[in-house]
Image (cartoon, rainbow, N blue to C red; front, side):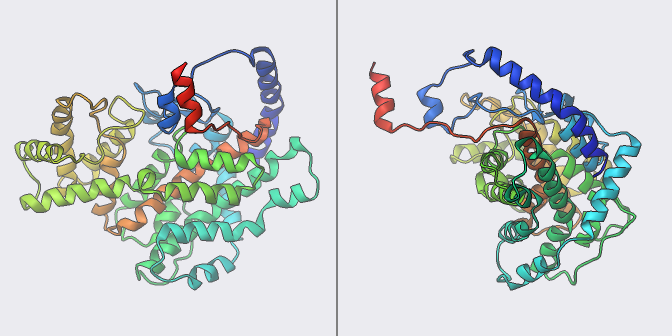
Length: 426
């Protein structure tokens, strides 16, 4: 067991007692109301879940354990995972210990997972391959072994942490192999023992990186997409499945299935597609005047400008700002990036004229795709796999925390449409 386990072990008893006492004293307190619109509208905005790893205030953007994401852009993904789990950033020794632990686990990735992937049709979607690979590794679950052996409830978090660390350690090599196999990039590239988790993922992808900036982009990408509170489809699905005491392999796999849905994980490639379509129409990076008219024409045609607007945010997504700054530093002359930057200048003003649009500002997906494209990763169908590698940190940390305080199985009550109509008639 490493230092992450030890820190959690020191925190969990007090956390359990605090939550138990809080619910006992205030369990009957009413904190909101359910409208018919919310029930029929995907429960959007309904405050009905507990998630301590992160929150997304509409006027601030992603905050991880009390720290705004804009203050974490220089941190390694390993530091973010530690922060998600325990609430503080690791010391240098703690970071070194976690990195060594992940590298040791990575060496134990069972070889049969590659046999599973090789047996799949070559044109299987990369997300289907990733999900299948993670699910095939379920036989390695320490949680299931412990549960079958009769472990006590207050011990659940420990094998859940073991499973989560194994999944995180194995994910980069699996994801990189899927990229290289699916798109004929050559044989699997071994991990570099001198690289960190995100840097190794970039290394194993095999994208040419003479300056090292692609590795920096991967570190930033993995940090920015790591978590986004508990109500999004992937996090909620993982949480719900985990609440049944399914192990992390089942739960994370379920979350990945949600992430594969076009309404959740397809946004960045749709944004890039619109940018490239715009550039093709104008024969290069269009002017601000051309972009303003094209954006208006897009809206008049009943379409949306991809990458603008967010279900929760009412400001420019701080994660967009981070990618925008990276592009300005690394590839300011890139025509695709220049187009993204010009869209940012003009589209919000166009959208503000549309009365029903509550959020005219860019979200994270408006900028991430163009940076991947700049470095030569042009296989759009793979982009959600990158998202998945990152978001596994959030899903896994939420699983550990939920098992630590003993969160019960999720079981909301459903009612037929006739019942809601009867309530409305009262």
